[in-house]
Image (cartoon, rainbow, N blue to C red; front, side, top):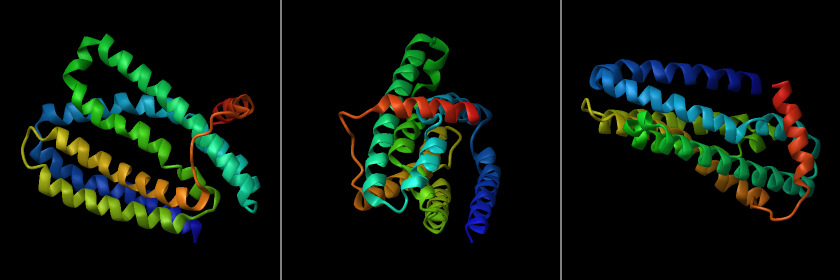
Length: 213
């Protein structure tokens, strides 16, 4: 069942863009699509910086504590804290680039919209649901928000200069899913930031995960 749900989610992630692309390419101008794609590609690098190694390491190590809720809660909070710090680093680097490279100024607002993915990818803690192999929830949630984003796309993106709205609709599918993730995870595991813990151990293991990835 888990294999089937993963395949289904992957197939839908390919189908939904195919459904929307023909409409978007017809409505938006070449310039609008270009700004959208360029902004997305820029932010994707900083999303990688914020999350590099976390998912692999968290799933691998967290699976050891799946049957011990107390230990898993402690581990999840440590990973969540580390991931927040890496997100701060990613945001700092992003804003340095935005204010340093003048060519990025014309993409400023679109990049800002896409940068929400950095924050919400952290609070989404999707690795926690992967540890529990809760793929039914992940798949259903993904389908619902993809359908909502398609509806919003047809409602709000209707003119050639609506590329910012298109970016917002695209981000909504991810942001909405991550908000639900955090609410669910916080209720089950009381996810919160920690001030003091042995983070060097996890950083070292995370580097190994990055190399293996």
